[in-house]
Image (cartoon, rainbow over all chains, first blue to last red; front, side):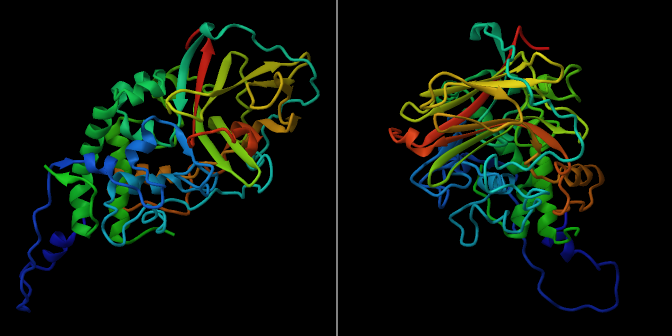
Amino acid sequence: MVGAASLAGCGGGGGSTTIATPTPVVPAAPTSFDSSNCFDQIIPGSGGNSLRTLIVPDTLKLDLARPPGFPNGRRLEDPVIDILLSFLFLDFKVTGQGPMTLANLPLNPPGNDIPFSSEFPYLASPQGNPMRAATTGTRFDFRSDPESAYVRIDRMGQPAIATTLIGSTRKTDYNDADPTADMAGTYTDEQVHTLDKLHVAIGDDLYALGLKLCSRNK
Amino acid sequence: MKIKLPIFLKIVFICFAVGILSGSSTFSADHLDPPGRTDPGVDASPDLASDIDDVFAWQTDKSVIIIVTFGGPAALTASAAFDRDVLYKINISSALPADTADTVITAQFGPGANANEWGVRVAGLPGVTGALEGSVDTDLVKDGVKVRAGMFDEPFFFDLVGFRETRSMGLIRFDRSRNFFAKANDTAIVIEIPKERFSTATTPLGIWAVTSRFGGQI
């Protein structure tokens, strides 16, 4: 890791010139975190939502009385991963840190590789030369079986929540569950525990860089 | 342009830490999740048609637009992921409790009478009498609601390659001009609903999608 401490140690291999500058005191980085605050802090500009209220239940929230744009709904052009990473890691009480801190860098590609359309159907046309379905049909053979004949495969509400905060051992269970299970707190401990580990993994790096985490030292 | 600032290196570590610690094989909105059912790297018979990639929802002055994508990112030569045995449900909560759907939109695909013909049937649309039915890759309109289901460009953007390279090499490899999901396609259901159909909503809309397969997992 490239941090203040390691940089301060460079050039210490016996050079003849010595500059008598004080050795900076780098506080020891925390090694254990409680990320509960990350779930509870209010996200600026979100209409009073916290990460917790956004993901429990795991539904995409769209307040029709407020301008759209993630986390109020999700537009095609929204850089949701960068924004979500801010939600997961940054302390929004710190001046200069907000939901768009990482998106403004940007961390990831800031947009799609080809333009979206401003009109229906909004998505861009397929690229390349895929085999397209014929559009000449007028009668189609749809199943009429009851829902009980189907078995759940996948569910999704908020982007990247299942992929980031649900560990591999619970992914199938999470996708089989309904939002009622989210509301019942079935995955609360799992989500906090997973985010705790994420903060342990990179907390020292962020700490050394001067970014302030939303987690607290244990 | 390669990102050179230390801050970016640290943030890259955030990204791969997310992937590592969550146990996911990829960092995505929901692509290839749950891995045991949809990821070719984990499942010998991945259910791509049932693999929800993204859920988008936003509003304009007149409409609420909901898009569910699946089966991506698909190669530019791949066909759309139409599958008669998959049931798509778009659930919308518009009143408390937030974990219960007040509107359930269902979508199915069915083959036509001739080779390579596919149709879509969408039911449960607010303010629409009966189901809306017609050919894929065609704008369908009924009672003021527009639907188009078919193949589109993959709309998600994220540098998954940089994430993987940085993880494996320990070097700064993140490149915000590189989008793993570029030059790929997706299958999608696009629905545009007049905004007034939600005028009785007493809470922000809560939207989530689920997929189920007839007869169980493949």
